Length: 196
Image (tube, rainbow, N blue to C red; front, side):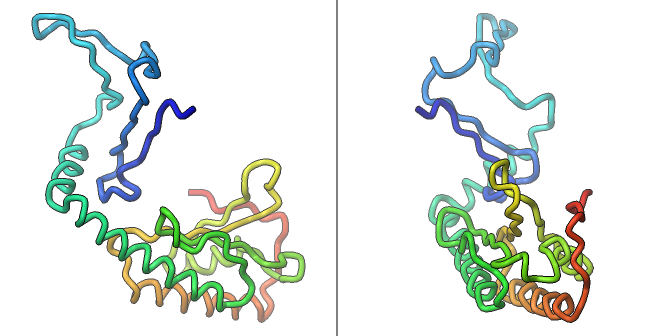
């Protein structure tokens, strides 16, 4: 029943921001209003270009990376990212107050977790995000979608260039922040998430 799939190349394609793809199962699944007919090359030429008049440098960069690394190169890069994410997941699991929701062992090199028992903790994941931000980390905390909005999670995405040493620094900063919070920073239940 899937008619189309889109992906953002800048997330795990090692492409500059703005690169993405959209694929349709077949021509009948492609909405006709996305196809433009141009005739400046001497005849009718249907074209699909969702570039919104942006420059094409990001696409060229992505294509170069595809050619340079190939399938095996991409696999090696993201296997290293997945291994690093799983290493962080083990660190998070050992910290105590968290329940892992995703440990990086699937399709994405990421880790997500929630507080095991938020009611018995004097601090929230928003408080933890604040302290981590003071150390230079951007670890988002946010509620799940409707019907699960009472569950707040954090997630860490491991991209190319983030190695074990950097993940160890994050884990150490998390431990220090948790210790600081456990020592008495009050929990503010009405606190909103960080906004850019």
